[in-house]
View 1 (cartoon, helix red, strand yellow):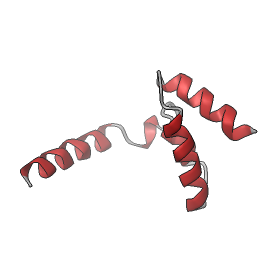
View 2 (cartoon, one colour; view 1 turned 180 degrees about the vertical axis):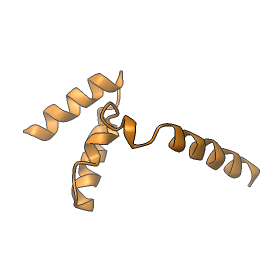
View 3 (tube, one colour; view 1 turned 90 degrees about the vertical axis):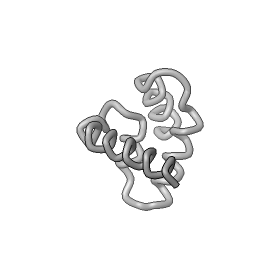
Length: 68
């Protein structure tokens, strides 16, 4: 149980440090464009499937797939 609390604490710190201000440069920011949960799920799946390389390249790939 201690490992879970340590992980949660670490993730909470990161969430505070890298909030919504970073969504424009993060691939997950694309997911936040959609209102419906189903659309967010599909966009998240596509983003995670293409998550190889730097954030800028991932965003470019996701944008290409979702624009077609």
